[in-house]
Length: 166
Image 1 (cartoon, helix red, strand yellow):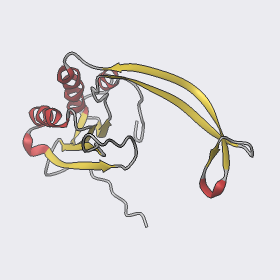
Image 2 (image 1 turned 60 degrees about the horizontal axis):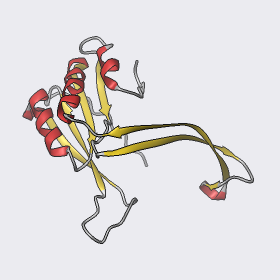
Image 3 (image 1 turned 90 degrees about the vertical axis):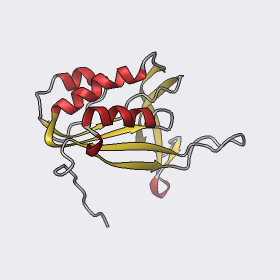
């Protein structure tokens, strides 16, 4: 189970794990944008006549592997999240960490929900994931970051793996 990435609705996945068996969880839920979200899964293969240019000018052809879409709107978004975050708390080891990815629309509500589940003292940090792509607008300041809330089951003893890459 170490180093596994699970793709899909995390509630049944989390429910399938025994109590206190996972030491690090990253959750990237729907953001409750109110819009239809669609994703195309692709693979790129090296090709002299490719439609993409990559590192050092290498060309690649794009192959579509699949497409999916969902309506990113919830009647009760916090109830949707609460069951999943409660299960995440249940399966975390005593020194486990949770990283929860969300955007500006819901981050403040999610922080309060996570404080309720983990306890305010278990909030370790808010990580700002800044980017400079996407739409530009002249009517308001454009959002150019997402939030990752980091909670530890035990704020005095938690998993934090960091390797200095040079």
